[in-house]
Image (cartoon, rainbow, N blue to C red; front, side, top):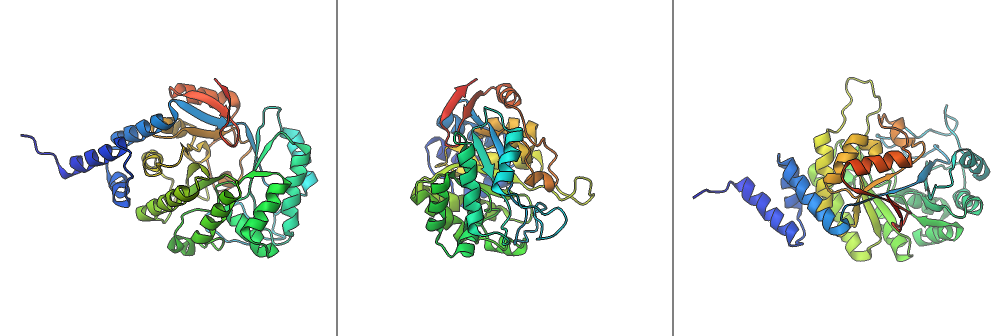
Length: 365
């Protein structure tokens, strides 16, 4: 009689949990991260995704907009921000941004993806006017804007509650929050990495507030620096618990950290194995999230394509000149065309589906 090893037995136990829709624990996640059986983990995540989404893989035609790079925060991983008056610092007026958009927009763009700095040089009304002006000039484009950390900053800046801030933005034309500002939801990590912006609980409470107002949001995780595997998994568990409470998250987006310089001899990029494992484990841990995103900006197009067979159901969008990750050293393209996205998805034996911000299906290719 063959005797199963403890490792095989544990993996089989996790497989049974996944097949029977039993939630995975922190210990299960740690075992998967430490396992060398990448293909089995990937297949489990692939099957979990197929149950939720079939072979459909989603993307959106969108534009990334950055009104300002002036920021009060000093996050160690960020190379986008500038101090007031520093070389390269800028703050665009709403109409300046409208003119920039007119130069680049195509009739197919469905979403503006807006993030930027925590700029103390302008009032909260500036951020509201930015949304309102864009919506007035491009009424058919959905506005996905600002991170949970930015909302916390606006609240401090204005003296308004999170809900009051969000309601003003919603009235101006905001439809959804971006997922940024989460980084790793661990106070040890946030202190070590000088994330002197929203705390773990504040970030979660902003999203809780948004969901209570009918504003769906996104969630990210910036992995690959000093965080422990336990902290990555606790990050996912925090999100899973809030999703149980509100069901307001649209998608989870693991972001591989980018080194400061593409030429430095001491830089460290996440490996393809770690990226694929993180996508797969995200899919298995976040059983109440409909979508896991394979973000080609931080993964690169080939790993992002492969991730579609490791549990991901979304490959993001056209973007049209992403700046934040590229300022930190991302090697990927700053954007892709619709045809390029469709090709990537089809070559992964998946069905490309163009969507809007809220995952309403617009066209199947």
